[in-house]
Length: 169
Image (cartoon, rainbow, N blue to C red; front, top):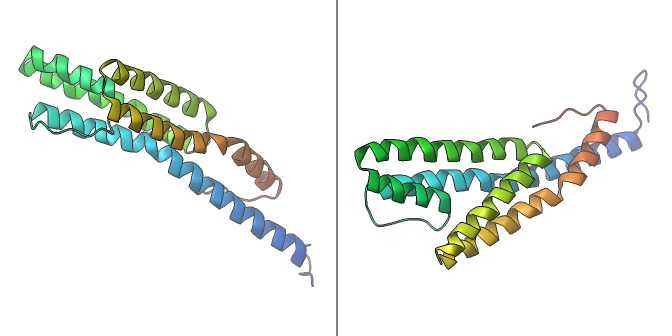
């Protein structure tokens, strides 16, 4: 059956539906993997606040560089605490930028963000924080799953643009 004047056949409609379904699945998986950048940013800020309040508690999920900033800030006194918040806020902001661009399929954000996170893991390795290093390895593995989706994401977007699908990003 065809719809008069539209040129849409049931077969092309099924192909279009399959393409939309595939596009949505890839976008959701990409966003899920990119959310690791957001989670790490948030928990790093939480770790900094916990450090400033001297609770003695911290999460293994944060960044090693923010721990270094926290330690230096404690030695600087009250002015150091303000700088601690500013510097760690900027670091978290950079991770939020990586999250934003990575979830939209920008390869440079994945590569740069994961590279910096790898360097951060090496910093933790130097401090012999092996549990945090193990978490970094796991998070990098999960991020790499998202990065592997980029070619499929580009391909489905090309197909969608030729089929005039709209992006839900």
